[in-house]
Length: 131
Image (cartoon, rainbow, N blue to C red; front, side, top):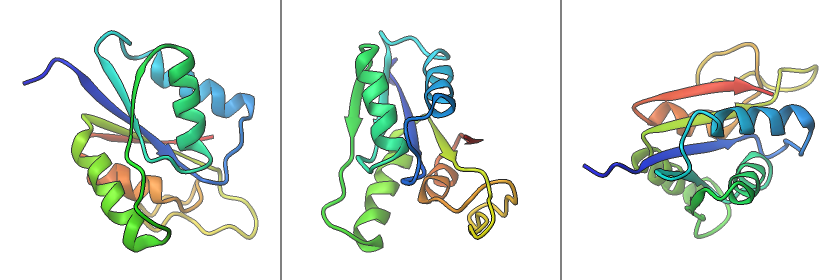
């Protein structure tokens, strides 16, 4: 078995680079040694892109699984690749707000629906964080 850890950071495409989001991504990265950790993401706007940008700025290796098109028929296989590759997936979701839909992937009433949560639940180890 490889001594490289593959850590997925995915989440809401509606997230922006707020200090809270940056702090959450940095706190995840602080848990790992950049010498033997590769950050995995899906290339989507929002959390995926923010996490990759921060990881690269801190000299982590990055692996992005980009979808082959637009729509769930392309996102689902990409998300399965992420979940299968990673030792752990972190999904960063936005808090539930008026007019937003709660996450039906995990039934959590504290955050909005995100495909990142779906992806995280497909990995053997995952954590959902609310920005």
